[in-house]
Image (cartoon, rainbow, N blue to C red; front, side):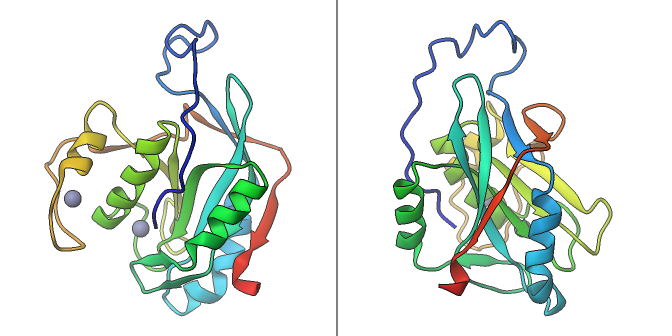
Length: 201
Ligand SMILES: [Zn+2]
Ligand SMILES: [Zn+2]
């Protein structure tokens, strides 16, 4: 998948926000039900050993971001890849609704919960546009079944942006290229989630 265009947010208090002195990125609220709802939506594909992907869209709330909408784009997938189709429909949806792409979510039908090299390259496109962007991996047949990740920055983001490997799946330098972020900048909240499935249109 490719990251949707996003306006760069001007944040005068970015480095000096009194409430979040240790964070380099603003917090993002994610509705608690999102992960289970997505796994349910993906169940048919999961049973066929096919991935499913979705976009996590939301709003800029000033000192934080909030995911409001789970969008399932038209897509095609294999056991270890998922590709959006008709991306212009996604752009149209986000622009009409004034939503920002805050993250993306996909399943690993049989594999464990980690970021593959393909996932890292996909995510670098999102995180380059918005530092707060995060990736959720749902691995329903594995334990842990969920992971929320982002590229380390400084560090992993540049490694991936500079990587010119030609094969889809390939190794990266053995440094901490990506990190688990569910305990700090992504915060689960009991907030409403709208789900829109473009596969049905
Ligand atoms: Zn993956
Ligand atoms: Zn690479």
